[in-house]
Image 1 (cartoon, rainbow, N blue to C red):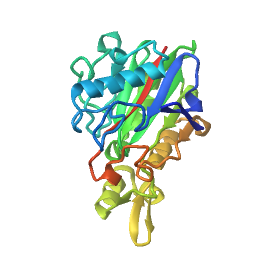
Image 2 (image 1 turned 120 degrees about the horizontal axis):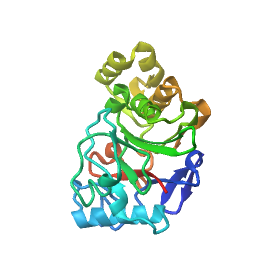
Image 3 (image 1 turned 90 degrees about the horizontal axis):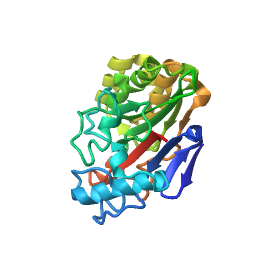
Length: 270
């Protein structure tokens, strides 16, 4: 179940004592531009670096009850890929106060003290937790735009978690707020691309005609791919919130026609 906790949204699946996690909204930051106010965690949308950094500091501090700040956060330019980068102690602050360590659309770690952050404004944020046989945690965060989704970023995340010793039955996935099929109108070229990547039955299940138009369910695509990768059905939760339906609360690229900021999805090991 997803629920509100101050300026953050959280998922009860990831409420584990040794983890931090949260999804930001448009609220709680210091951005003052009309299209980024008040919480924007990405540069390139009009906010100066110091404003973006302060927003990230606020999120990190709020999430950790003041224990960590922006120096614990790792982020990078996102390219709609299935690239997930392992990070360790030396990566703390990369993409915020230090140069980023390379483009990609996800991070994975078993190192405490790091907050993995991906950024979204309609695309699907997914936060993952898992356990090794000895109980030690592994966490992952991925940015799943439709291209990354059909390229298999969810499957790639599961494989990397298992490759690091995570037990498949322990994997829990929170699919955060994103644009839903109520608002995500797409074209025939979209359906053709999804069909080419994942097959006709997959496309038919997640892209539907309504009133003569095509609408896509990208959160549902990721749920299907996670199930196919071996994640338990009861270990996957999808936020019911559609970003395009509520542009006053969430940044939405579609609803704003590109004039927007970005929200963050963060997870880390205490």
